Length: 218
Image (cartoon, rainbow, N blue to C red; front, side, top):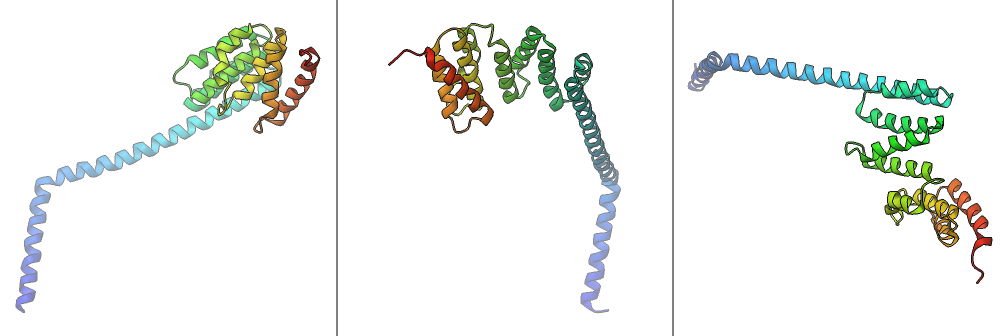
């Protein structure tokens, strides 16, 4: 045997002895860590499956409730929406619940439901703002213009996603109160905004034509 082979063989034996000593001392720790990793992965996969199942179930319940509402089965829809148990779908379900109450003719409870959503800090801010806008639409025929201004006036500025919805509500409230100059201003802002949806632009155009005869003669 050459010196090089002898050195290599001795080195391998030394390493084997060292590995053996390490295993004898820490083998149980390594085994426990390996088991923990396997259990952790299994638990994570199990949680993923559980969450996916919950999400799919909530989605089915939500879709069923929306269909029931569309069919006029309001009480069934409300019961189904209350049963939605999911973080994401749960928020949508609360919005839909308020919408169903409005369709059912219970505007007061619908507004209360929307206000509760808007006041809930756990709700997505975009959905909370949508709740404020929807509540304002329900109140446009009964609330004072200043009360509606207090509710949604902050949306009346460029860059706000709900600006035109807010302007439509405020414009209609001003029209109802006989403040035709303010109503005309809001409707023209909606009409001239390039981001206005076609249906809303058409409504604004109609309102501008209705308001025109009531404006002061120049």
